[in-house]
Image 1 (cartoon, rainbow, N blue to C red):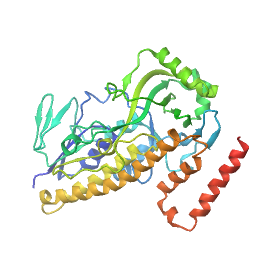
Image 2: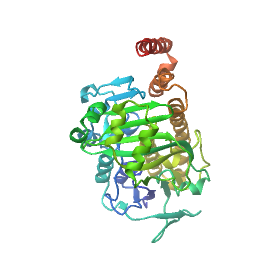
Image 3: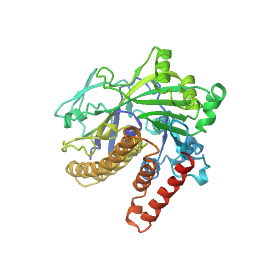
Image 4: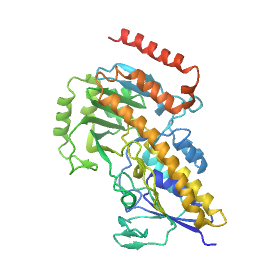
Length: 417
């Protein structure tokens, strides 16, 4: 029996996770098409915390958990959530592996390198820029057409070309735009910033704005400033900003009321990149299109304010790999595959709606609610806790737990008037 042929468009963490999960199966033939010309064509962004039931579960099933542990940073679990006055509403220290809270950090580029190294040679085809996909599932690239696949999987991000075949839905502008920056060798060049971030992540919110910073494994700090801005249709994708000092000075003026220690992060930051934040509607779904599906940001791009996007995408890859393997092992793979994909998509819609709902709540409370974070910190904490521990809501303990959270912050706010 001929192997099932699977095309994956996009070699990000989600597409590569799927490729890894399928690449050692004798009855499945996988090819990954990636528009970038090489694995080093561009930087891969900041850092991720992977979660036990999603991202980490996918790595375990892929046989990569031990490799992940070699690259993971458990001290990166340090977390500070504060306001513009640097009042710390959450202040968690970094930990050792044996006392982890289950959300170890890994730099995006290290995760991608690990996944790339795990995929069989020849699976990834670099420099394949997709123009479109037609109704017969032919993939039309700059160099020509590829066809004959049993399933085409779009893991090609927010502006997915594959999604255009199955729906005309496009991401909507969130109302917020970020600018990403970097501080290289922060311990030496910006020691006060290094100490403030504490080898983990710092999120400061106030007045519909934010200053975030995360430490990477190489000692640099990733910095993000978030502000409400009108949509600019000419800048819907990341764009480098050339006039660094003008951008910095404009932001220092915009954030002038913020604690000097937070503004010090901006003063040391370099290489700004404009990043408008887009999202698909909460609960969006599509009608099944035979032989085609989408995963990751192509299926449910959302803002980053719950830290769940890549985790959800890696879970997509895990669940889709199981569907494909089940079909490929059946007596009639061609007949079994459509039903398996429809079942997978129904599950994806449920998971994506829950996660996008959480993310939208975090964005609304932190950026579009007066007095945030002071006015919403209890809701934020309870929402995140019950998202990750869904059983808590159904137990008799939840009212007592919620009361304890509100009581703690009532005392906290009395102390920090």
